[in-house]
Length: 264
Length: 165
Ligand SMILES: Cc1cc2nc3c(=O)[nH]c(=O)nc-3n(C[C@H](O)[C@H](O)[C@H](O)COP(=O)(O)OP(=O)(O)OC[C@H]3O[C@@H](n4cnc5c(N)ncnc54)[C@H](O)[C@@H]3O)c2cc1C
Ligand code: FES
Ligand code: FES
Image 1 (cartoon, rainbow over the protein chains, first blue to last red):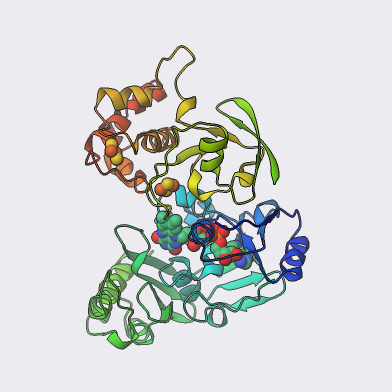
Image 2 (tube, rainbow over the protein chains, first blue to last red; image 1 turned 180 degrees about the vertical axis):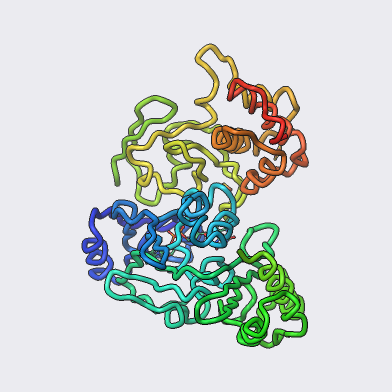
């Protein structure tokens, strides 16, 4: 690992300033992605700005939305009674990310800032039409994700919290990679005020995406059966050593039907 | 260089480290506590698991500077001063929960976290899922699962509830 300067500011403004003043500075949340990247020398930041001192943890209900602050860990989301009563699918999703040790440290903000194409949270954010609240603005989910590892965030912009509109019902089904636990295919299905929503992670060759054909079918009838004849174009799929494009396209259908059946 | 102060196994510890020093490097190279192992560079094997402020963490995926002021417990901190093993260690011995022993420090630390965070009972399924972050290339896990289940009544000083078995 290359060496860097370590800062642990106590206020969001100071963290933003530290990132703005130095183009090579990077934020550190739970470190579950960033530290492995540093260890492999895939990044060489001049400074690391630890977000742990900013008071960015907590979960609250705000009208018809569930608001989760950026530094809230996967474990906290999984164990929260607030989450379990408002959006149980989100608690299940968080409780199946990686392993126990990853969940004790990894955060929702870090996962969304990273936008790994096989990460779990992006599918929930996109399907539920959540809003990413940052140090300077509010970004709609549809504008936030911009392809693999790419988001609308500026280098000196921090996610502070995420606001999820509470759906009628929802579920997440994931086929984990047996070694890494990341989603080989993950599908988040929700019945929202705007209609059915299906977001797919792990499978797409350009990151998380909404499955319009499945949404249309579920708007007709919100049942697993309605998805029986809906196919997923192989040309949209990612193929790698873990699974080819045809296999992933097939898994998208299987996971989507399981998610519909698990909706609550 | 950063000066850091923390508590390791109940004793105050101080070290001067680079910002890039990992917690596991602090433990092994600076404090000479080599019981905590490093088995991978992808944060997947769990040989490095220690307890930081009561949470089970992979010390290979945390910077030493992030542990400033923390209470850290490693495998060396489990046995009593007179050498009496922690019930989890004793049950690993009793149930032959190790072969080469490389994964064992992490397994024992994860096992303790699992038992402590399930005061109402712990099923075999929960133990197996709870060990997803710990890889063992020798045992096939079966005896590790048995050892953790056997440590539960000893650590909670009561019988495992029927429903949880
Ligand atoms: C073994 C293993 C298994 C895993 N399995 C899964 C899985 O099954 N599903 C899954 O979804 N994920 C998985 N992960 C990833 C895990 O969820 C990480 O916690 C997450 O991707 C990154 O969050 P973090 O808090 O650790 O962020 P960090 O690693 O600290 O940061 C990641 C990136 O985000 C930036 N960043 C962090 N916080 C903010 C913020 N608030 N605002 C702006 N930028 C920010 C950082 O600068 C960095 O570039 C796994 C990780 C490991 C090691
Ligand atoms: S050394 Fe493998 S997870 Fe830490
Ligand atoms: S006993 Fe050898 S790796 Fe587990």
